[in-house]
Length: 479
Image (cartoon, rainbow, N blue to C red; front, side, top):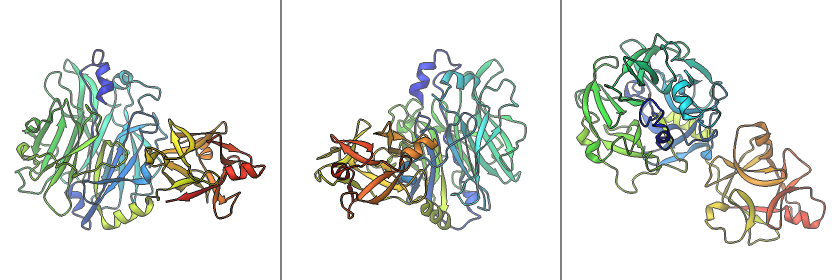
């Protein structure tokens, strides 16, 4: 986000504000469950209204990630600004309830960075689930409204506090206090993410130094002498330790020794490897736009123990991972998640009457070409239709979340905007080929008298009235 914030430094209350990544899947919570075997990441992907929603990714080893829902969004906010960033996955201690909490913010959806900093939403967006796959409608939780002159509520996190038997919910709010207008971390207690106690200042750096990014991980007793370790982005990637979530925190150092400072990375996101005492601190390489980088350690409270990963030892999937959180999954949780969002096969769509040509996108237009380069431009996933039962939608492989849709009976590749119109225009019935029953044709869901066909090599949605149009509207789906 810093590329946007840099342009606002002259008018913002402090330099280069940054968002937070979060996780609430602590070892304490997981101890009540079956052994954990996989990992689930919640995140957002970018700056458009579609990117600023909830996306999920899965990993078997914590380092190589596969986008769920074929890279498309999983949850869309319908409340507040209708956009969300910085999602946190929260599991109850017994593993029978889950929440996603996120920043109510959609840059470019009627609000710019200056307005978001100085007069943004005071709410968080919350979803609830009992199984990780079926989620409630979202609701707004007002957390900053009770803070005098609190101007926004960004980057939430929640962690179970065994001392009080409820959650410590914390977030960043920009507020003038003691002569400095800046983001500080506030906290409140909650049992259900529907009501909270009176917010209190939680983390406050000296002078004009802001802090927005911070995340806590619980570590086993005897690992570094602290029960909890906190990573924050406050000019450095700073580490602090404590034996109590709401107690005194001790400064441990930062990661500048391995060349990672706040000018290169932000959004610390903790993950503990299953079945061994080793951790990853994921850091968003915002200055280079490369997304998350895993940094490894066997001692989270020792800044000197952190090491960069070996080349080729990790893969972040097809979508850019922006500030989020990671949940360690039990076998039952992992089975449910993977069954709900299975990966669709990668296919090509071959023309019947020009068999050397395949459907491809080029500059977001859709056409048939031979020798498609790069080959991913001609690769598609036929997924369950966005509208109607027994239908399909045609999703791009290298632009996850983008679909072939007709607009004015012309075809283009567009991101799903969540509207009913888009869903209908990007949905088709896969029927027996109009020119050969062993091939296939795609009948429009919204205009059932029309089919996908090529004309002068461009894709159109047309009525089929003669042998030529029947041949043009016939294709083969191949692997």
